[in-house]
Length: 330
Ligand code: SF4
Image 1 (cartoon, rainbow, N blue to C red):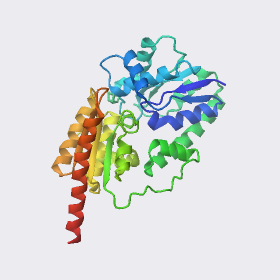
Image 2: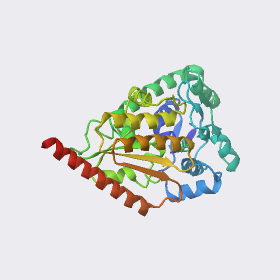
Image 3: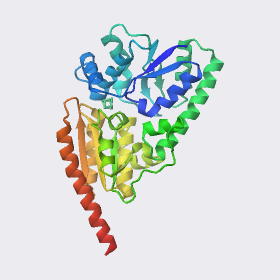
Image 4: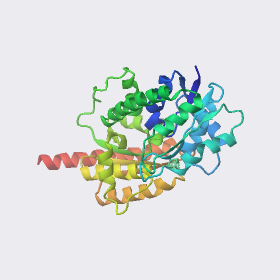
């Protein structure tokens, strides 16, 4: 039974159940790297190119974490995950960057996923199954099962669960129907790439800090693809970067919706798509008078500064909510 390593980084937060169900259905054992720590980041910093963004450096650290524990590491070459759109080029070059900068790696499983011209992701999984030596009938059955699991996972995310909760729910270890105790709490939209928001080390535990302060949080993943598309349709031109479109589309949807009390945009320093998406969102939020906080992360980000800005932002959010409630009661 081959042991396949999956780094807990980048699009792990979107696609892990899809990938895991495929490998497990084929009889492989899946090993995930542990949650990000300072040591993982430091190892990534030693091996990654200097000018890449923090999430890629973190991903390199996760590959190193798996290196001596598995027979192969799954590091897909993601080109496009939606028709007429591209994913960030850093995903495309990641297998080469990792392969050239880390010595002694086990084989990398890096099939290409390119849905720019539409079509089915089956070819991606078929290439993966071939590389592992499984017969086509077994690969097809594993692919079908993996797609069902991924659909279930997406539904759980859209019901408001965060990825780790949705994964636990898939495994029967979390009550998907249990609401968070946030009645009457301010509602804050946290917008940004999943690998920035849900990685507690990278985000300096932003979601945990908000939760402990009694803030209810929604993210782009709580929205259906239709709502994200409707939000993005307010842009004068169609965005062809999937991650940028999801960020702007979700933010515009929540701004239009009018029920959020504040918005936080989390982005990576040195990220092209984030720099323009953040500007679009900030301008619209300011025009609408919504409390808005922009957090730009890199390996030098300090928690003390972030906490001070977050506190000031939350004071604004709570004050605005109180005024609005008093205004509607009088
Ligand atoms: S979209 Fe931005 S943060 Fe994400 S991998 Fe690309 S450059 Fe890095």
